[in-house]
Image 1 (cartoon, rainbow, N blue to C red):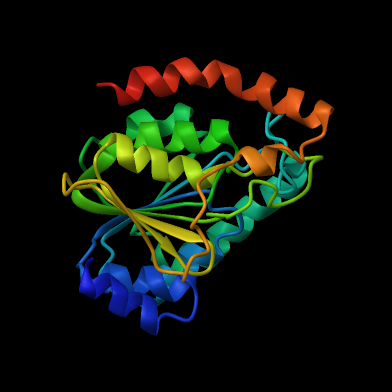
Image 2: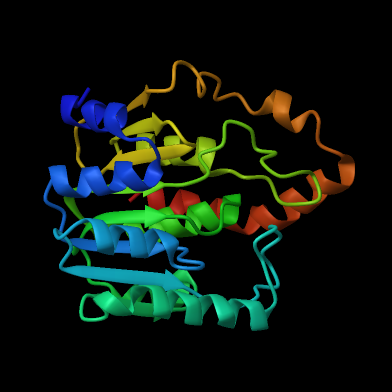
Length: 246
């Protein structure tokens, strides 16, 4: 277990502070954020650490017809959020790079093995976390860090009118596939480091993530919502297998 990471966890009161402390402790200079929304996280990091040389913002800032989550606003509201983000981060416009689009639309604009740090707060469905981790993993430098939000210990983070939140356990399975350590953090976060140090799931929350078995959670699923979940996620089974077996 990395003692430096544990010390950062202990002294961090929230996810914002944890990421800031991680960036400073490990001197992480090229940073990306996926799922910028209204720009609060970017503003905080750019204001509170001088370590960052480049900050890449990835977000479509538009309504997505296949994204069944509460944050899927209409296009007018997303445009307001985009303008709000620009205003909040204009003080650091010489450092920021804006990639307006879905991961699959803008991923080729990021060089392989170029990112020191990535924060993922995008589409938390099985489809979304699959696309994001598989596409962005090659963009990370060796020993680079990925931190992700909504590492919810229940797939029903919202309610059964919405797609399940599958960041947990998919991120854990992904870490095992790429033979890397992953930390379950306080404040519903995960930390994944790109290194061939051997798979290990380290729960730093006193057992919040002790059960990887999803059977009991799906057993409470209504028939209609289960059919929707399967219909929306089946196309990604072959993609997961093809990408991770390489």
